[in-house]
Amino acid sequence: MMQRKLGCKPAKTLHNQPRLSGLRMMARKAPARLIRDHIDPAPLMLGNDQLGNCTSVGIANHLRATAALGGYQIDVCTGDAVRFYSESTGYNPAVPGSDQGGVEVDVLSMASRNGYALNTGWAYTPAWGTTDPQDRNALALITAGMGAAYLGVQLTQADQSTGLWDTGQPGENIPWGGHCLLLWAYTGLADDDTVTLLTWGMKQKATWRWLKARVTETHGLIWPQLTLPSGLYPTGDDVQRLKFNNELFNH
Image 1: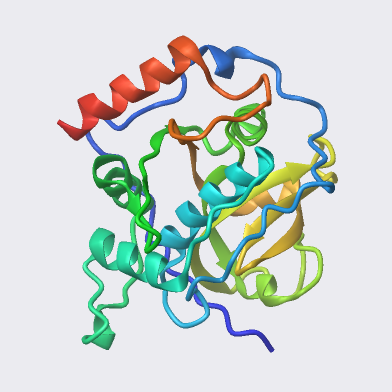
Image 2: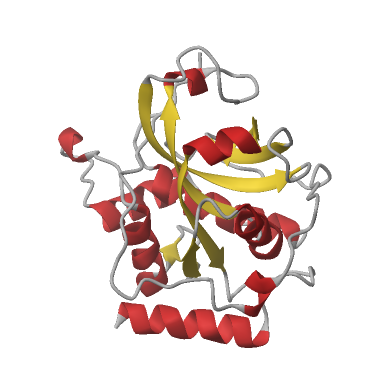
């Protein structure tokens, strides 16, 4: 059985935390379906089977998913994800007890200030913002318009299964822990429709009903250094506003 670690601490809100609500794109109605079966986002494990570094891995896999939408890919290695995990949480490989996971907004803040550096010599700096995790239209808009949604969820023992994640399964009421994963695609917007999540180096299917029950925080990221052919990707005023909100927050 594949080993899987968690590592997402409880959600918190920071002063002047960037928000997505003021962006023009967030006033749209989300696409009714987002089918991406023809695109491989190529998610990687990046050490999340040994460490609670899912918050770092989520950023790396978001970068890779965005690149895949543009028709190319970006190499990220486990060392990159572990290094950023150390930088953003204080994890020290020499001190096993320091593997305590991360707070998503703290990790995103670090990435937006210092960038996400790779062994290849490249460093990518995202701009990010937060929205209501129970706003399904917003979650769908972020996924369609920003490549993927960066989520925090609280998993239960039922979610250790390898099949479709849904509510009402054995172990539903037994907490497992917090985890960071990405929302990548969806077949529709009803409770019974399925979503595709990127986690632990694979695609995981779940229902919207499951996501509604588990999600605790939702964030959107854009990568100003990358470009996408999709007309939904933020441009112009939206990009400038998100950059400004990040600069205001970081200073």
